[in-house]
Length: 394
Image 1 (cartoon, one colour):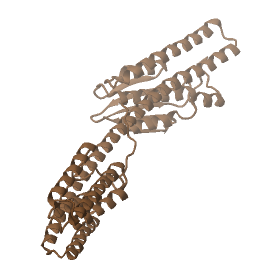
Image 2 (cartoon, helix red, strand yellow):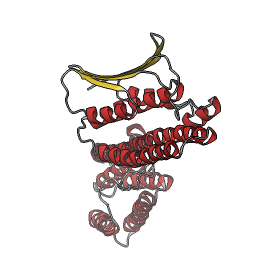
Image 3 (tube, helix red, strand yellow):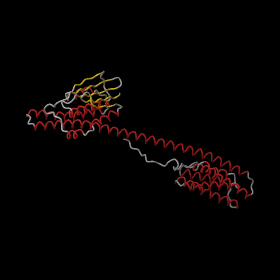
Image 4 (cartoon, one colour):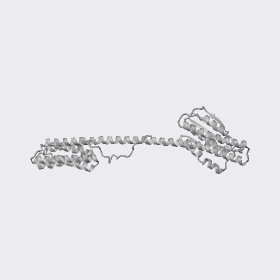
């Protein structure tokens, strides 16, 4: 059976999304950082004067904030990532008096926030940039038209981040679905393997139970022959019957293995042989046809169990085995009359020995096997004797 790594991964709530926006690897992250810094330097015209020094300071904080967000996102530390995005938004807003490039920085912060947070928290974080821009513009005494650019940049960043987040969640959902399907396939294979093992175990159990039960009864008869001082010919005949049972058990095992290949099986010949071996009358009703392997095996096993029980509990009884073919089902009926006196060498085994040979689970096991195929098994008194009837749909 195939092996698969199905260890449970993080759920959708705790799984860190892929970094939103611009970076997916170290090289790309460094390029994005270089682009942000270069654009800020060119837009603010950072120099050595007072405003130039302020611009350099803001650019440095912006670079550190970007690195913090990148490291937090890559290492699975959401607190660091969110804090860095908030700082980045504030820095972008503080740049508003220096250049309209502040709208780009706030937009990048909004993109980062929307990739990590839900829409409302991300919008609140983006609003920090607008608040910082308002304060910076008020302190600098510059007109508030730049505030509109900052707001527009933040809104665009939010929209792009939401789209990015939804796309990432869709990819995670597809991955989860693929894992669930793979797990389902593995469980299906495992169930099929267990079912096959159970089927093989049932076949081996039924073959051995029938053969060993018959041998036990025959050994009991042999013991009684020796105790009664039977002739050498009678003892040899009993030994021959025991040997024949052992050989038939081996052959039956081979048949069971062949039948496990699910090839269609014609059970009439095997049932006729079983009936002849027990001195029972066998006949077929309806139009004979090959049956699915599972159905044929169930009928043969039921006949074996019924004939074994008849031999143990009703020695000398007249037994009839009828295999009936109907349009949509197949039936098996094993009927025996009241027990007669057992012929020499075939006396009934004592109760304690019967319990040891059968275990009391034969008909129960047959009923379970038949019910797995959607059929029914009934057993009970019938006209002074006993009848076992099995019907299995096809």
